[in-house]
Image (cartoon, rainbow, N blue to C red; front, side, top):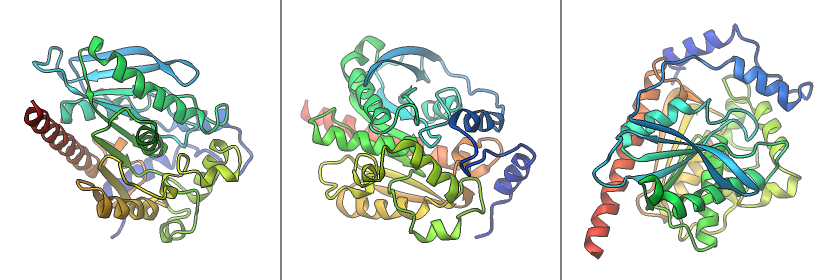
Length: 321
């Protein structure tokens, strides 16, 4: 379908701000500065509790942030580990603060956003090691925070979705933590650039094929890393033992087809998995609340999915008891 009117308006507004250059002429610091300049100021969604934390990463302490929609929940809430997008290079927990606030509000889950080490200073597998270590830390320390870390899920947008999928694989292969679900939002899941959506939307929207290739070069140590399922989860030979996934894609996104291909495998092999495409919008639309109506529609959908995951987990716990 044609580009959504809301999405087109956002692109026009962004056109007046210089875009990052991904032609090799700019280093990561310059790309980060250009990306920060394009952030849209927004009034934060109020929550009962927002608390900065120091948690253990793969090589020392990491900054993290806890979001709770209720200051004193009657029952400790389940925990959603959130890993921000930004091509493993740009963005941080501040850039994704509003997404996490909204996720906590619509789901009732506790959300913990992790400020993992970024590429190219920390290449694969360092960011993934941080996210996995942070997830394990929460299982060991969640009770102190008033959380039910026995009910745990992972989530991320863009490269954060890649990291969430990697954490799910590590959790399966290393004997835990046990995960209820994974939310993968327009995630890069394959280090190949041969899909139809890469050809169709190479340069016509917010995320370009040129930018995506640049991001992968910053993240991986070498091309061989791109064959590892921990870097490119679509390369996983088996999906057995993984938690169900909710996979969100955007029509105007070079990553669309690899996300949907992975989603088909998940829905065929893992009960409870679902793929949802949002037509007419581009990569990054979830962060456009108030400007793109489908951002709010998608957030409501994610909240409903998490509520259903929580309900099913509660029923199972009661059945065991």
